[in-house]
Amino acid sequence: MRNKLLAILLLCALSVSAQRIPEAIEYTEIYDFLEELTTDGVIRSNAAIKPYTRDAIARMLAEAQSKDSLLNKRQKDDLQFYMQDYALELDTLPTYYSYGHRHVTQWITKVSNLSLADPSLHILTKDKIFKMRVRPILGMDLSYNTKGLLMHRWYGAEIQMDIAHHLSIWGSIRDNSWSGQGINGSRITKPQYLNNLPGVQYKEASYGGDFSDSRGGISLYTWWGSISVQRERIQWGDAQHCSNILSAHNPAVPMLTLQLTPCKWFQFDYFHAWLVSNVVDSTYYYTEREKEGVTGREYRPANKFMAANMFTFMPCKYVQFSFGNSIVYAERNVQAAYFIPIAFYKSLDHLLTKGLGSENQNSQAFASLTVRPTDHLRLYGSFFLDEFKLARLKPSNKENNPVSYLVGFNWSGWPVKGLSLRGEFMRSYIACYTHSINVLSYTSNSYNIGHYMGDNAQSIFVQLSYRPTRSLRLTLDYTNDTKYRAFDYIRDYIAGGRPKDPIIGQKPFSEKIWRNDQIQFRAVYEVFNNCYAHIDFTYNNARAFTPTSDRILGEDRGWNADGTSKELAGAELENYYLNKYTPVYLQGKNFTFTCGLSFGF
Image (cartoon, rainbow, N blue to C red; front, side, top):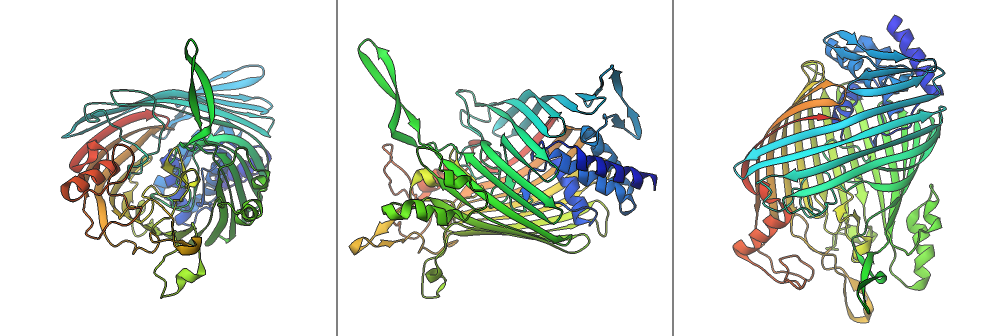
């Protein structure tokens, strides 16, 4: 009764003051715990929109504490452990929790209390008008297989502040470096590589790859919504392995965001983002003095923007439905029409471009559905519509609409507490996510914004997960990724200038050109909040295949040095596909051992 009363008071406090600071989706441990509580029917969460804000996570944890009779001992220990990380959101200071005991180092001044834990510095003024958290970031992963030793290290710091219950400011910097003999001068992540590693923009480095990741933002909020300017990774669409709507696979981009939560059964999300096109604008350049009397030109990338919205309805705790639409557009300046949060952007696009007889911008529509028919079972799916024509639904029409769909399930907590089984299946049809105009493709920094497998591809993911004790998670995964014939979206025209799409008319999922099977065992233990150690044992088999059909216009079967296409065959073509889609370190059959320790994700 005492715990329930405390939780009710905490929920009341959170409705008055909170921090609208996003919790990075790379911090998978808290998200996995919340998913477990949601699947077990303890709490409600909007899995279609991530990241969650820290105040939203605190509310969910407080809700779980008010229903502690539904939790087992391990879940109660996890709950107590994670609530320490969100202490400031609960208007208190954290204590270091270890083996059932709490320890805290605090300094009390005339105006504020300070706490050192985790190891983070927390400041809370006595009037609770100002809150601040400062945390160091440090980590290293070591991976080894027969190709050599690979080291990934990162360091930095983050700061989070909340002022007067209505303004949140946050920022972080992480300097990363990949090195080791296993890289052999190449990279582990590239836009073309078909893996689920977060996309990055490398700096110059001959030994491997360096990159920095600076994120942050400022948010003005009240209890029913917030507006912010931020640079964060976002995920739209309920998914465990990788979403096919917005997957957060691309590097984070700056964006203006709006979120409205006027009641518990409805949420609205909108953003306008400044993407990175990686396409040169030949009419936009700087002049640079190279030597006396001679100037050179430094060409700039073309502008590229994206606007998107999502409506989420949660009529009961068993059903959640989301739908929305987006547009990727490339203009010299931002278009004011796309700052309208509630709009059908394709209609606006027709108004702005159709009368000129020019090519439209690139619009999309999508939906996500989550159903929990019974405790311990969650079913979900999402649908991404890149382009749609009713005529393509006729049996006599050989063309397919470029769409992507994903279905999955999560069975958790029965018959064994802490044990869960997840499965996910994704398919994307030919030309999904692509566009005949490069600058309008569904990408940023050349990384696909949707599923990392891209178009004409399939992904199967199965995971068995077990949480035997507080903050320890053991997982066994199987992933099967298959890429079929690869095309560049080139529009062909027949007499009279009428378009035809022979690429869309090709049979999807017919001839595979690349496949990777992976089995991974992973053990993660969060020693204290945001500090965890892990070990991974991974087997993968990445190989390529030669299609037997004749090459058509726009099909990728190799490129000449001058950028023109050519037709490779046999082992030469297989080697081309393998190098294009797989880093050298993971080509062929590999047994890879990885261990790591990090403060912060």
